[in-house]
Length: 493
Ligand code: AMP
Ligand code: ZN
Image 1 (spheres, protein in one colour):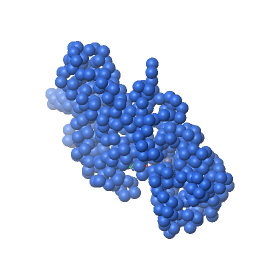
Image 2 (cartoon, helix red, strand yellow):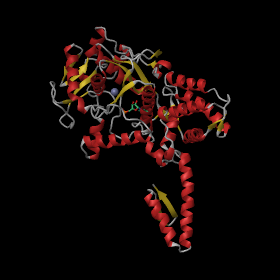
Image 3 (cartoon, protein in one colour):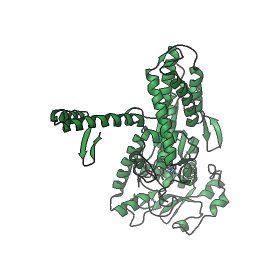
Image 4 (cartoon, protein in one colour):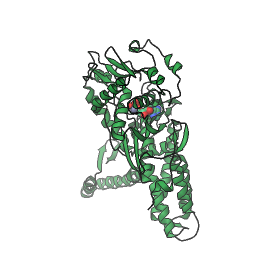
């Protein structure tokens, strides 16, 4: 059978060229994708989660089309300094100092949190999840290769990339972000570490560790730690090769992080790493970028529990995911309680249409052109992963399903095709979760439990202890705990 990627060829908006381009992988049938992972020094906020969910959609769709995808998403556990440039304290070391913990305790705690949040949001784990601290050897050898080429220099135990030397000899620093050398040179020299640089545009490949710095490794230039940008060059090359297909991350990483990665890769391998650079857009709160450093954040866990003043209620992870999927990954998305409530309505309507579709019969007729609809769904996703257009097409099907009231005016073959495509799009590609996690199911369960609790209360009033105990014990066996309190009885699963 022809792979789906031939039937529905993918086009990607490439940030490197600013054009939408036909996606032609380096190795036919296989995709290598690298996405910059989190810096694990605090709980991931909903903005971080949006970027990783955007790339999860892309991962899921490419796999669905039949590509063999190797998805590498790293964990940054060293080297990311406070101000995202080459000065300030390491974010993880700082948190460790404040909490009086080992840096690796911080890393472990927030890596676990990140994994939990992403699993609840229905994100598939990447194929490889390498850490910066696990690849010090590879990073040191890259620094050495760049020094050998004459595009880096040592200064007071640190090593800096020499942007001017690189550009003089045919390098193209600025190619991704469009920044010009004269703008870059106008940077401040006042920042800590800047006086070690020949030029403000230069960036750290290796930083000397001060005596107080806990995270340090021996190197040919003395004890130190790798610069933030280097880990991604080292790990993408190691696991995906010198030239691979897709490199992704949030828009804010374009400069300097990704610009520096390209320069490092070219200095070592003559390739800039990825052919296609993809940048996911930001989640905003009150119109401003959600950001840990400004405190303008909301945590995914607060949405799942409803425990935040901005929220009228709790939202299931699947609703939160649907909220994100309603926007294209390259558009800004603004968070609000109202937007979540609207997303919940849409989400529940979609999933209840799926329940009807599962039980529906085909009565024959030409009520819906399933073939054309299916093609439109795939074309939307193949056109730069356009999930909002896909969702609009799904709602055309919802309209038809709901109007049919269980008896659909299509042939049995069309019904099968409608079911297969609907479930592939909703569950495999958008990654929504039906079943117990959907709010429609939760509402139904709440109502059924209210009834059971009422029947038990009546049994107790009638001193029918055996019935009351039977209800409690059987529920317990089913994993449902009744909690009797002064306000009445509640349940937990
Ligand atoms: P960090 O842990 O700061 O390295 O960020 C992890 C990822 O989250 C990066 O890809 C960032 O671009 C992304 N990110 C940070 N803030 C936001 C936001 N408000 N909306 C979407 N993505 C974000
Ligand atoms: Zn990176």
